Length: 128
Image (cartoon, rainbow, N blue to C red; front, side, top):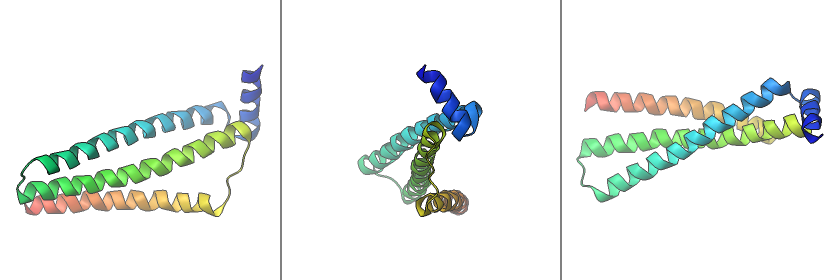
C-alpha cells in the first residue's frame, strides 16, 4: 500500500517516523505562531491608526510591532525549512545548496534580532 511505501521511504531517506512526527509538530506550531503574529500585528496597526495615543504608548506599540515582525520573519523561514525537511524525508530530495545555508544563517540572525528587540523594549520601558 501507499502508506507502507511512504513509511519505508521515510526510514530509508530521512530520520524515520520520529523525525517525521517532530517536523510535522514543528510545522504546526510555527504555522499557528505565524497566524497569531499576523493577527496581533494587524490589531496593533489598527489600534495605532484609530486611537489618539500618548508618546509613550506609541513607542511601546512600535517596539511590540518590531518584535512581532521579527517573529513573523523567523516563522516564515522556519515554515520553509520544515517543508523542505518533510519533502526530504518523504521523497529523499537533498536541499544542500547555498540557499539552504543562507536560510540557516537567516534563522540564527533572526533569533539574535528578536533577542535584541526584546532587550531594546525593556530598556525603553524602563526609562519611561
